[in-house]
Length: 317
Image 1 (tube, rainbow, N blue to C red):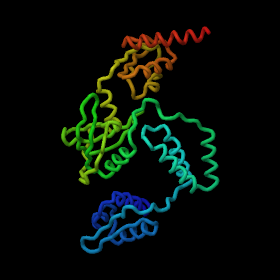
Image 2: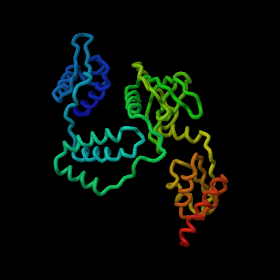
Image 3: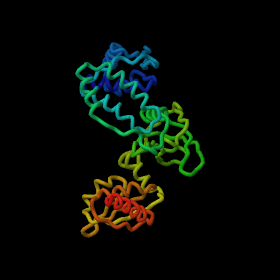
Image 4: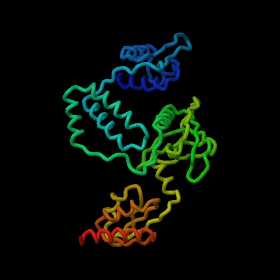
């Protein structure tokens, strides 16, 4: 591990704001106590306020509430951050768009003129939609509280309003946050139900870290994203869509993505989707450029007929 990598690792550990005994930090970083002291001094030189306790039980802790030291960025990193901040206008997180404007103004003020010109070019030549209509929103403090608990492996308590159920109190071991489509999810181990769960962030209220640490368990899935996707596929949906298309399965798969299954069927393929809203399968079918036949549900057959008639009237006018 290089010195810069070790410094970043040390800073990451200290930013949990817990007290770290010196020997434990040395073991984590695989360095001697003397090297650790030098690294802490380097952080202090950069402006980080690190408190130290000397003696056999000595250790280190990053002081809370201090001002943020200067952040050094490569040109490409600064532009990437600015572009990312601009894109948050489409987020479902309430208030983050205001935060992003404030953060963006600070980042831009620190950029040299040539980088500001690059960002002005990006802004003037780019159009983006506003927040998605109908996307469930949640408070930004929920997101930051959950993210920190995931990072620190800290037990969480919160109230949860499950689908068509009463609000329940949960005690969970948070693992990861997942952004999927228009929704955010927390993947966590539920202490009371003794099983893994995914929680929609817009249904979480009053998350409260307990200060109790835990050792992360093995997730019964390839990763957190796969776990959430598996859970969505198992959930009952309003509409079970099945349609036959006169096109190769491999050509349709990229249009469907993770939202359905495509199976080869002779010279064509079969599309199956479980959805709450029929607009998405309608767009997939319309955008396929192939002839198709909807087998179910009847509501989608009617919707295709309605939209088809509207298009025909427009074409004749």
